[in-house]
Image (cartoon, rainbow, N blue to C red; front, top):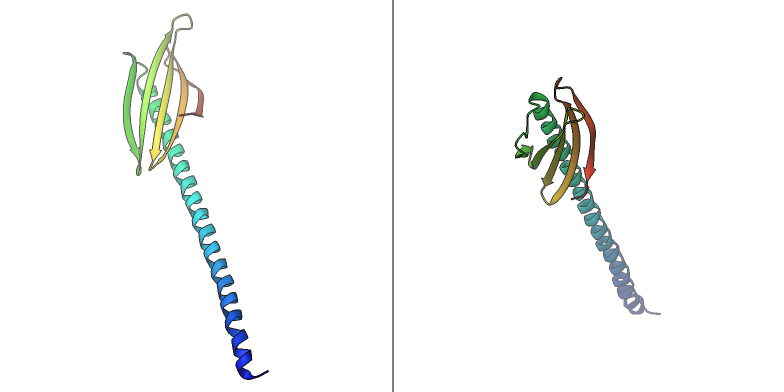
Length: 141
């Protein structure tokens, strides 16, 4: 074999190895992109959930400072938690036999394109004003 024959075999080999390396690099880049996009979505969802919990506890703070909150039905307001926004709704029902106010605080928060909702139930005694948090949990939108 001459030196020229060895060179003819080297070119396809180099192109084949180069193509395999390029394919591995492209596949790694695609996997890395989707992994980071998934992580960013989880962070936004967690931020929205935290903001929704903050909204519920803000509503509970309003109830604890004024047990007559939402006496005319439902109170709606919104607040900002960092870069996220929260819409809060406080509704009240009166349970006369037990002499208590039953409040429901619902907070829907959004962090960019992610939304989460948390609902809390609170009972306040009409005479003493003692507040009891019955439940605070995430709810479906």
